[in-house]
Length: 407
Image 1 (tube, rainbow, N blue to C red):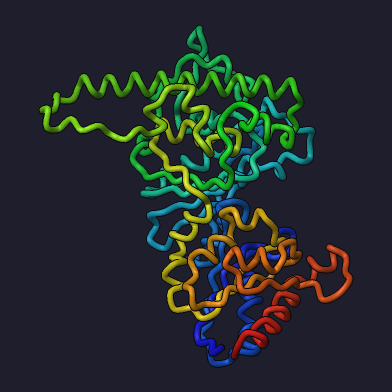
Image 2: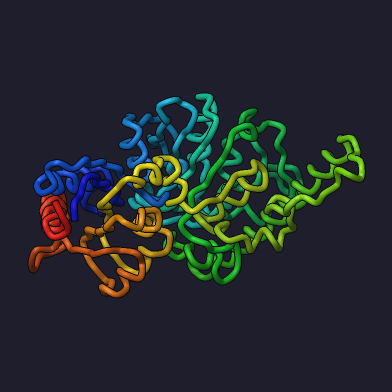
């Protein structure tokens, strides 16, 4: 086939290369064969780890830094990104509440909180952004986002009107939320929260039960956290209902011709409904208060990044689309990077995956809209060796693929 335009849109190869490094290596390999082709590097991500770096690479912007605290309240520095026009901030919550930052001490699943994420978000609000893209994977916390609320000026109060303990340990004691001191811009910006799971807030598939163990929670901790998240959902449902009733009383009554029903959103449902909304269990329940109080949108991470980097526009004239990640398996086809790229590629384009390991059959690849998939392993090798030579191997494998598919 004649190839005139190639788009290189890989994810990072975790533990080896960033998405930007992988895209550059693919581009070098493609140029070895398709010398006359237009080649576009478009590092990609699914809203989890690596999204900040991918967007900064596409935007051509350096990361900014801010002093904050980690999930245990210890001083740390977190990065964030600003779009070229300064209107959009991309924040990876794990920069402040990630598991790696607290791996030097025993995990504290009941104590860990998102306060440091909130301080980072307060900083970007102070910077005057109009939109926040919040990526929430890799967290060490199960506090329902209450630390974020506290850092933004909200008060989470118990029966006596005193602040509750930080982290998941204090959730069950919350009876009231006071927003009088809330950051003045928290409800003025557009919030989008990138998730790559559809778990609900509570229950057998909830935040505590599914993700608690990897954050150090035992069976007793999980029960405490799950009950606390239920209480938080109940308090938020009551708070939003009270706000809506107050707004309705203050507003002028519409005429009968204006009373068409509005669609139901999570912010307009009761606690039982809040507990079952898909995606609310991500990152220990971070989406719950941001949706109910700030009107945040919960979106698949790959879709959010695709819009931010204008993936569809980049793929429109492509003849060959190169994507990839560390491991191509069934999870790759559930809204992750490979799936997002393949689903947006034009029908005429060949879509080729370059991966560290292949766990899909040729038939499964074809069913997923992939033309072919290649492993970078060029012989028996240890994982550490593949990781250390990943860029060279990605470049080499890409050149082989381009030689087979066209010039």
